[in-house]
Image 1 (tube, rainbow, N blue to C red):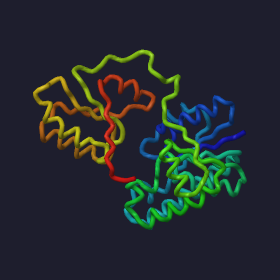
Image 2: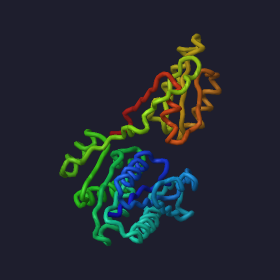
Image 3: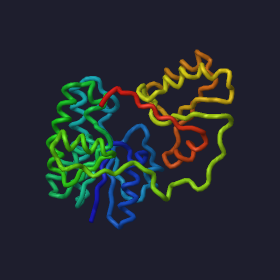
Image 4: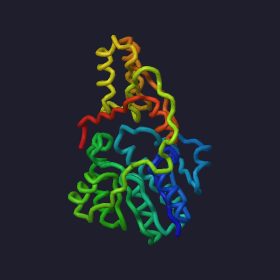
Length: 284
């Protein structure tokens, strides 16, 4: 059986996708990945994947963020056409679509091939602020999801709350829940040396909904305790302004770490003493 795993980024840096691929290969399936070229494209990382990888390069005129909704839709059209073509050429028996943007071209390819389709929803895409910024775009994507989920052979999501949401919203069978837990083989057996002092770490995308500003503001309460430090590892929309604020306020007890390869993330996190995850209620 041949499985085509589809994700609209450069494949290797999405841990959920790499775990899928490794487990499929481990079970003896013929696997191919179809992805999109993005800023984190890395030929060496792609070469290390245990299966064939096809990277589709989007039209240069419509890459990156598009503020105009019609340009966004035009970009989607070009992107969908190229991804559909790549999937069809592989003639898979099963298409595993990761997230809503990958679901649409996967569904079109499935109709042409007559194969099976799995929808793996990593989040409530249409309820995020990214989709919510453009009402027309949001409605079109939500309509597409509503249409396709009832025609998938199986839907998967990351939590029981998300499964209940989809079941109620679309009146479908409750999706299968597969959480983002670490694989047993990747559990640390040797622990790294801790950083000096006492370090509180927030790692991931540096967005304004993840409590980083709260961590910055809390630094004033720890100025008399030189060994207590706040730390952030990652990249994202508020990285530049956050670094400027930390510098201007002379917050020497706030540290920035560069992003690391996903395979090293847990090891590097273990160098800190406490992990903090602050999720602010900015969307459903």
